[in-house]
Length: 391
Image (cartoon, one colour):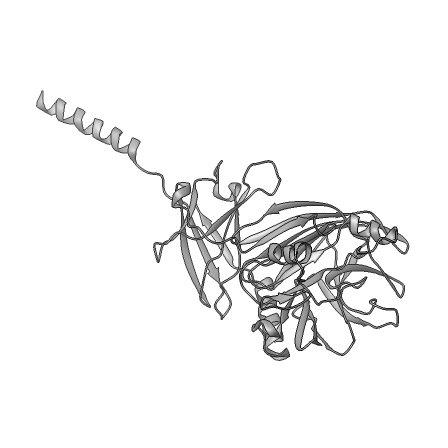
């Protein structure tokens, strides 16, 4: 009788233990195959990657330090459901780090300042502007275009990308627009934060695209539609649509998602395009007193130029399989001289990075340091962090 009771107790204990046994946590192994430390590269994990229905209670734990990582949830589709979770690991050269997926409450999620920010700006016609802790940019919308076409002062007709030369790490977009539209001040003067003194006109600015037909470059007018996708501590991204445009013998259909991550000087342009199999991303040559340099093997094009009382580097970087070559397109017509990076379109899409470094911001003291940064950034693009998910 006692033996029967003992066996029953053991069976009950085994059943209870199996019921309360926790599932094995999901492990994320991140490996750096390069020989230098990588700090501001964003890893993106989807619900499918993690085999979860809801990301809202997901945290990412560094198993070595025991610290929860700064994360950001992103709704890519705009349907109110979070699709991916972002984080930026810090990883030494030729090393790897293990992370664990853990369940957390919203109060447990580490907080960080939203340095990656973008928005539509109706108070200044219809700019769309974006920034992080290093750089800021803007593009121009249909109202600004119509003002030019109707001969109304204050408009802008351009699909080029403007550079806002900030030299502080905190957000400046809202402050600068308020200064320009609500006070006697202007963002065209530097009072300690930087300024907008980068002329775009009809040039390509920093990364606007064109299509070459025979010896002529063609490009779109202003964007016609916009949608903010996300802002936050690690990334801001948004969608732009353009009216179909004529590229010589071809009609081009163009839209794009632009994103800017924390700590990076380059925006990522994911351009969807129909009608051509190659595009060219341009850098305005301004007064043509700078130096064009490029590296087809590593996939970058740069223009280092004197700028006001300082110096400025602008650049295009693309994966090796995308970057075909580059060209100095120098003509007499105002604003049409650009350095162009020629990029292959694959499956109606092309991905490239465009950005700048301002000497006065303290980030890049000279052209050599700037080009070292370009080579390093190109290596990271072509050798992404290796992410392995163990379920």
